[in-house]
Image 1: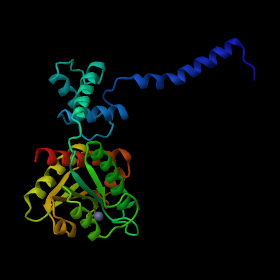
Image 2: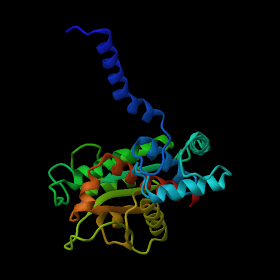
Image 3: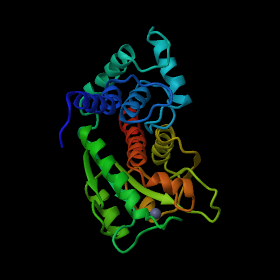
Image 4: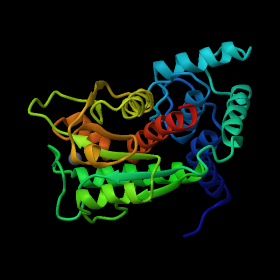
Length: 285
Ligand SMILES: [Zn+2]
């Protein structure tokens, strides 16, 4: 094909116009209505600095807007609700400060137990998704976060296999873990039930403490409802010899929960909620 100079210029202009939004969006400021990784990073930094932007989901909604404004006000910045260079720099400082607290979990052994696995899918979602897949993905993200913080992490499973309950408990007891965290998804006869539940060992104050802080952080990071911080008579809680918690994240019987449980963003946010709960429990007592 041959192009005249004019049509060649027109073609180049067209390509430039097509590329422009992508070039701009790479450098764009993030504000109300925006979505994406940069928004998620900003939300994460806001949570770290003690503000509540709503779920860390990469969507710049009203709660994120309010949190950005509160952050800007607190830092003496122009309160415009836009994550521009000055706000980004201030948030970056927060992120760096958080990272520079090196290895806060060094010397701690933590057992992560993603429920079910192998031939046991756990609860089946209303859309056919499987609990075993959701909880493994969350557990693997959690492992990375904890390892990054210096913890020694032992997984009861890191692939699609099913250890027995006795094997899961034994891994924690023989390694004298500081904490045992089991990850599940809930199900209930009422399809409207949605949110997070945590279970602790009966009559164990330390187990109740970790169950409570994990709930607080899961709510903060996922935006899910608190459906209860309860004591539970479960094998893994009865037979482990350290503080233990079962986190039931979302309901497989609820359409909205199963939909987000399948997303990488939600799985990461859930892992972050668990992580910050664990961090608070193990570093603040
Ligand atoms: Zn389960």
